[in-house]
Amino acid sequence: MNVASKAKPDARRVVLVGAGHAHLALILAADRFRSAGAELVIVDPGRFWYSGRASALLGGTIEADEDTVNIGELCAACGVRLITGRAVGLDGRERTVFLEEGQPVGYDLASFNVGSVVGAPFPVRSDNVWPVKPVSGLLRLRQALEAARRPISIIVVGGGASGCEIAANLAGLAERRRLDLHITLVGRGERLLPSAPSGAGAYMERRLRAGGCRLVLGRKVDSVQGQRVVLDDGGALAFDHCVLATGLVAAPLVGRLGLPVDPAGGLLVAPTLASLADARVFAAGDCAAIDGHPLPKVGVYGVRAAPVLLANLLSSLSGAPLRSYRPQRRFLSILDLGDGAGLALRGRLWFPGRAMGWWKRRLDGVFLAKYQRACVSARGRDTSG
Figure: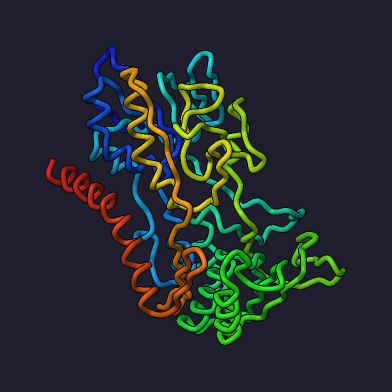
C-alpha cells in the first residue's frame, strides 16, 4: 500500500523508517515539512502497537483497536506518503534506504524510530516462547489461552517491571475468563523490581503471590529447550507457554545500517539525535543510543525526543543550528497490576492503588487519542467521498 503525499516535483525528501512514538508526532507535523519544501515519506508495516498497554491487551482488559494506530489512515489524514513494508539496510553514500520488497527509496534526510526487541541472554530452542515484543504476539498468546480447554502452565522469565506486569495480567486474565492457568515467574535477582525501591519490590511480590503466582527468585535461566526452562542449578521447569521479559535491545535493522552502535545495538547519536558518523541520519527512541548518556528503553524517551527530532530535521533542511536533546533523569512509570490497580514508580518514590491504575489508563488514553482521532477523520473523508 502506498499513500501519496502532495509533494512538489523538486521537493527534498525526508524518509522516516518505523512508526514509533517519535515518528507518530512527526507525521502529525507533516505540514511543517511541506512548508519547508520537503516531502515526508514513512516506511512501516502499517500498524503501531502501543507498548504501554501491552500487558492490558494480554490481560483482556482492552482489545486491539484500543492499543493500535492505523498508520495508513494517519498518513492519509496528514498527507504523508506511506510505503508499507520493512527497511533492511542503508547506503549513506548514495542516500538510499533498501526495502525488504520493492525499489530502494532515496532520501535527503533519514530518521530511524524502529524500536526494540527482547534480548534473551540464553539459548532459546522452543516454538512456544512469546517475547513481550512485538506486542501483537501477546494478543495471539491471549487468544491461545482463551481457546484452551485444559490447565495451562505459563512461565514468565524476568523479574523486572515487564515480567511483573505480565504475570499480574495473566493472573487477571485467569480470573476474568475463568481459565486454569498455573503461572510461574522466574527472576535472577533475589527480589522483584531490582531497580525500584525495596518496598515496591516487596509489595509486588505480595501481590503476585496473592494472585496465585509462583515465584522462583535468585535463579538464572541457562536455556529454554522444548517445553522446559533449564535453570543454572540444573533444575528444570516445564511449561506450555513461556513469556520472555528479559530486557530490550535495539531492533536488528540498526546493526545493518553500517553506522556506529552501542553494546545494546542502538544507533550512536549525538545529543542532536544525528548519527555520530552521518549527519543526514537521525534516530530516536529505543533504537537510538545518545553517546555518553545511556537510557533505559522506555517509550517516554521517544515521546520527549520528538520535538527535538522535528526541530533538527527542519533545521537540517534549512541549514540552521541544531538543538540538543536533554533527557530527563527521572520519569514516571506506572505498572498495570491486572485488576484495575497500578503501581507508580518515580526515582525512589512508589505509590500503589486503584488511583494509580486510573491515572495510567488516563495517560495512555490521552497519548493514543490524538492519533486515533486523526485516523477517524481520514475514515470520515473516505466514506463521504
